[in-house]
Length: 249
Ligand SMILES: Nc1ncnc2c1ncn2[C@@H]1O[C@H](COP(=O)(O)OP(=O)(O)OP(=O)(O)O)[C@@H](O)[C@H]1O
Ligand SMILES: [Mg+2]
Image (cartoon, rainbow, N blue to C red; front, side, top):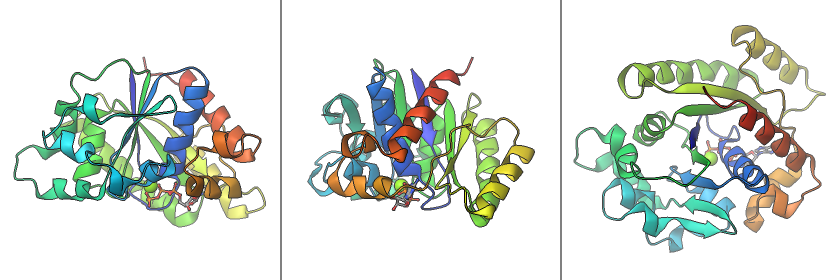
């Protein structure tokens, strides 16, 4: 079972879009996939067409020990989802020690999935630390622009800290270049700089700027359900194949 946090503390870089559509591509390839929405904005929950305000139990309830994960996982047309709802932000205020490990402890008996993907919030707070303590791998969506590129250093520092203190097995699976437009010089420059500073980390597949990817969430659909012929669907399918090939030893 591969456990992969999709994380970047920078907001709006394509974490949710990537989580949902990589999950859908892996599912189409025949893998059994679970998505854990560990963002209190509940965006991947929405993207899958599940209304977070109607979700009675969420990841919050399993982290706080109030419910067992098996009762909360939703089977959404063959893709399994552990939904978020707004109560997730209250994890911060739970009066318990070692809060970084709540998810890992609650999911100790989780099995039966080939891939578990976690959609992280845009911060390095307690929810992201829970995702990084639980996961063996991290995938970093990078919007190929100047500021997101520089912001990525904080994330690498945080991953180093997690490796030293919380989860020594964690490793970066790869960086996804998102919202790529070949006509924009800055996009190409950021990709070259990333390859220079972090050789081999960028996936070969770039996720192109694509309007269908923006529209799909409002229909509660993955890109493969909404526009299977779109550039977005092609890119996420190619990316998923690369992720399968980059399995850790
Ligand atoms: N390849 C793309 N082309 C065009 N728009 C995109 C693409 N990928 C994502 N977007 C759009 O960019 C916005 C941010 O994407 P997304 O919500 O996936 O980012 P995020 O990192 O999860 O954000 P947050 O940090 O708030 O959780 C969304 O409106 C999304 O539809
Ligand atoms: Mg998001």
